Image (cartoon, rainbow, N blue to C red; front, side, top):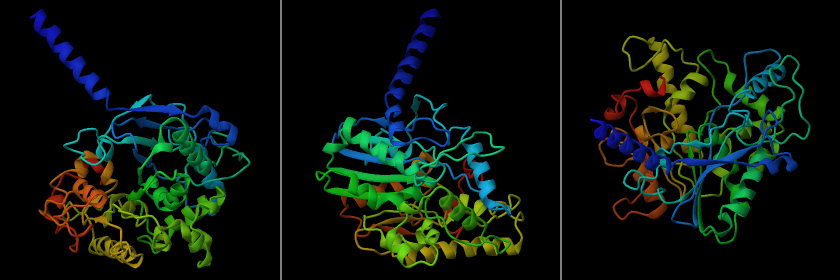
Length: 410
């Protein structure tokens, strides 16, 4: 019995060691403080990395995690700063509690059967601690009376620059030949905002560059009460953070309000980088945080939503589809898209979506998200088009609409 227990322990230990070899390791950039690149609370920024055997191929990722925004106050500047001060006390505004390693999943998974595209690439996962999608650039720290942390810093753009510069000097990015920039949720928005800029920072040796924003196409849209609460909050945050330099210059030139250019529907047509957006037509974050669909309404549960709520639910997906189409993301040469009629958020970063036969577009076609990305980057003779978008409404992509949605909190 003792021998069996010892063998069991050794097997468990070996399994853990195999698993840990695929984890991403933290690198904090303590020297970046000299350039003003700091998290909201003033701590050092950083990124997680895993070296790959394909030494000249790099997947650069913006981590997600929402924003420190508010929109339900008459004094929106004061409340936004208080939200950012609160955020500065946790891992989305401070590096104090960042773990030494994070697990791989989705596009970072090292299993080549599950993730044939990126399993052997160098993975560089830029962690998020500025609260404004790596976009703020305010010189002076901001005092927050009554805030949990004060002063706070809006330096997301400098964090982005510091991360890329360190990768160039220490991680071999200076010898890269192929780079993919991605990110999910708030990091997906950062991918739209910064794709063209990041490409300018890369060496001439990079002959292939693509952007894959995941769940970052946030709509500038009214909520169930007819008020644009989300849009108001995002505009206020980006103004406070002095993020105008991160906005698309062509969009600013044609807009009455430069902060309209926070929203990809207003500038995605101007992005030069080849893109493969990943975007649910029924994004669960947007349904709750932009449309403000009440938590009592769960379309998967018959009778939980009013007729009016279900109409708004379907109208939102039409608005999402129309906005994507108006920006050319359904048909622009050199691009691709994964645009499903499923309720989800950040599908490229979780195994339950990324390579799952319940999540195919169209349903039962064999076109998983993992295959869509592989064919976009490498070409597939059997796949003549890289544009994969559902023409049905929910729940008519049957497999995904029947999937267990508890793990996404909807």
